[in-house]
Length: 464
Image 1 (cartoon, rainbow, N blue to C red):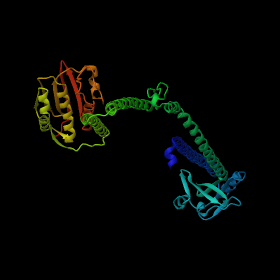
Image 2: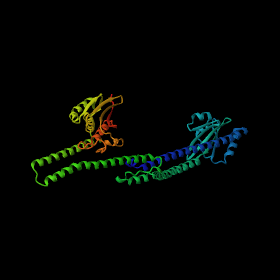
Image 3: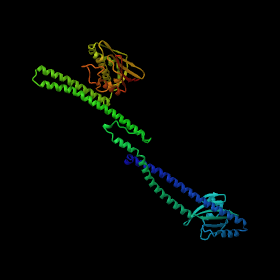
Image 4: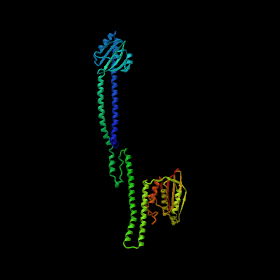
């Protein structure tokens, strides 16, 4: 059974043989039945033809004795044909050496109603079949001027032919089944041959050749969806592999920078004796680098959990206005240092994990404060419709160029032309984390930036 599930060739061959066997057996049984019926019809025609001859003899005879004499003379030269003549009281004549059943020698009317051997009734009498010793006989009983004439023909040669034909047919069916199995195997193997180029192409694709694709030009129509699906899979793998390679490179750069700073500071400090204050200053500087490194690692772990659905949101009702107001209180001092004012308008409620949504809003708010110009206004606007609930964070600052807007949600992405403020630039994971949080909630994040006005928008599906 396991081989049946694993081998497509074996399944196709079995189905092909099953269909072929059913057709052959059905055709053979139909042929046997038609041949048998044809022989029976020939026997009946033969017997009724002889019956007509008997009736013609009887019409020209003057007595029963003359009928018996002429009929017996007419049929003595036909060895396969037997004859019996009787009246209502006794048997007047029967073929030498042959015993007719008693029920055949009585009147036709009684015979038709009493005999269980009758297989067909005709206008001239009744047709019957019985076994006489080793011979199979088929007979017709004909009324002739108060007499009952029974004509019987030996059907043994028909039986022999049918037996031989039946045996030959089963031998042919057996051979045909074997040949159909071999033919089915050959056809299946040949039919699956177009898979070989696909297998050969796929087997040579590795990490260095993810840009290679399976050709679909000469692929059969049935296999074209498979080839297209494999090519789409390779495209996704190529994209994810390139993204992973870029992420690994950016990650190495992000970790290498604080480690290099700490290593250089340590080497310089240890190059000669220092005062206690100098050692403390070096340690404080190293602590800052370690805090930055720890924050980067923490953000990476959080991003990995969110993107891989390892951290499932706790579904609860979240009031966006209340969360935004609490965050404004937290960021109020930082906003005052930048001479920036904060304001929340609108209200809306969504279903999701409160802490994750709070972090998404916090990332956008801190990003807006970091890049806002002094003496400007940052607004958080909440809106909702029957289909979607949105939260937008708008600030005034440098415009994000349109070509790089889709890339700002990538990990570790930084722009040298827009929103670059030395000393304030983070690790470049905030927007990537925000995007992952929105995807986990079935929502989206988008950005628009023109003429110094930048708006980040979180879109949630509206709940009933």
